[in-house]
Length: 202
Ligand code: GRF
Image (cartoon, rainbow, N blue to C red; front, side):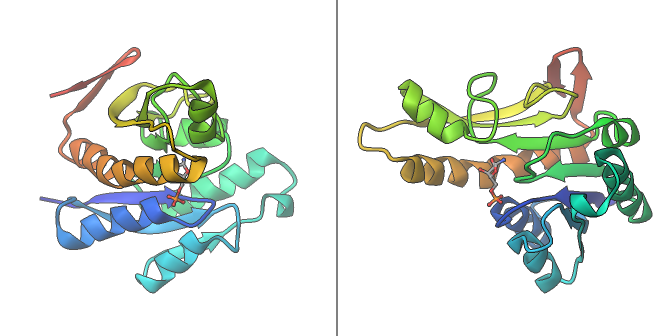
């Protein structure tokens, strides 16, 4: 099977990037990460990519006249690498028009809560503070909103009374590392069909 060409955008430590690269390496994911781009040149995700021999770019948004031009530069790098699917993995920016237009329904994200509950930057903390008994993670396609796109897969974990933000995040992260490669594999197999808000798995 031809390998799906992935471009990963990450702002931080890149553990989801690592799990995707590991699955590609093991052959459990019929894909290859061909480029990693970060809005934070110091992000450890870039280091992980370089260690794996993958092209890695840090683009400081402040170096561009506008967010639009920053995104155009990101799009160019993705297109130059012939990326077929863009995976956001801890990418801490709202995706704008340039990326959405260049990759319609071809951008995925993983969020550390059961959407539509607790969108935004602090999914785990917000779930804990709200007092839910179950939380988890969501892989979804990106649209113009904040964590609002069509949902592909979700996994649930219990919230325990002794949980801290760290312990809950760790429990969710374990599921993230399993769920994201699974969703990408479904995409690689051409099994995801988006109709309005719903994603059908064929
Ligand atoms: C993950 O919890 C992910 O769900 C969220 O940001 C975090 C990124 O972690 N979007 P990592 O950089 O992949 O380790």
